[in-house]
Image (cartoon, rainbow over the protein chains, first blue to last red):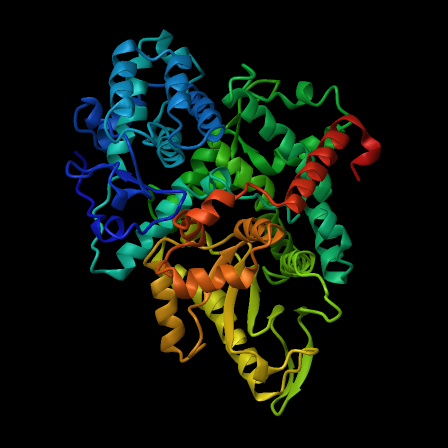
Length: 207
Length: 389
């Protein structure tokens, strides 16, 4: 599991936005518990059976890939993430199928999404894609597209998409206001900023 | 688009002209082209198309959009890989690393692929969506600085447009009943000189609602890094400044210095303070508690219900409730006094109130009409030049 993130003061009182605060799931969390009704969780690589991943683990893989390949695939993912509510189970399964991910990965993901507490969890979300795109821009190889070295690196990139979730866990000192504020600001702005719009509230056309 | 065109102030037109001069395209066309590209991405995302790459020269061929127009959007929205890498590294050097938003992607959300077609790939579709809408604000800031003016010179017009939008929402929902119940900002005299009243005051005798509107945007470091220091400055310049204005106006109203039509202070028992921000607030607790504490520390809004922090999207949802016969003040009373959820965002309060949750709608009728008008304007701009301006 990623570094523990103690969200209990929030989750205990149902304190989060309707659009959800997306955090990694901890071992002891029960995603269906009423107390957690607004704290939604994304699926981490380690939950899918992946090995521990840190930034170096990600960047060492990205360095072998064409940046253009990475950004094109992330662009496609971003289109699909933006076209449905976060946590839409059907869309997440469609995404994996459309990208041609292996049955092993899809089955593991399906088992989590369909399992206890899996409803509303997210395999794909903006913060994950933006952070991987940022790392790809900085670290991947700027050579022309070559379809992930003729397909040889497809699996590595899938690992990066899933593995980057391991970089998003944060140790938040709940007794330090600046830590909590920074965490809330960052999470709400980077992960869920627009989801209120899709979860039952009107949009604005002020311009 | 409609509201902007109807706000006949020199500043608003100044800003519109500045945008056109700086971006090389009118605000309307900027939105039309931006939404057209965004729609392409959504079509791919919703499995209605296999095209996620936009080749502008081909994409706009069948439309009356001129080459100069889409080139202007591309110039302000796309970058090559080399440019992106340099900008991301510069961003990290200036603001530190982050696992949250990427400011570079917010400013240039499209990757321009090498080759003659100059095809465009989205780096982050949500960034592109914000770039097309909120990004206008940043472009105007850049335009002001390029012209040697203060950063806020042109963007201040957004405040007027948003203020007008808010006022109209309440005027639609609370029509006159022989006397006005919605009061716009007005000048009045105090013993210290001329003063300006709150942006909107609603007479719900025996209650009243005083609304201050915030159009000021948070700084990049707040938005992309969750930076506590810049957040504190944003709070001071935004919410706390508005809390001071609310406090002053409410005290002047109570003291009789501010007279609002037939609304008499003696008949008003509870005044609800509201701060309405164009982009809303990161309202996850403990943010409301921190803001309430800062307001209390400054001795502001004492003896009143907790200040309600709302965004434009929430106002639109509130307007829908008002269309159904639930008044704004009833919502505020339940949320801020009776529910026990006063520290939760408005959306959560609604979700936790079964009768409200059952009636919550995606858009008010007015918002539906606005959305239809906007999409119609976009279609008109793409397929019929005459209706795009």
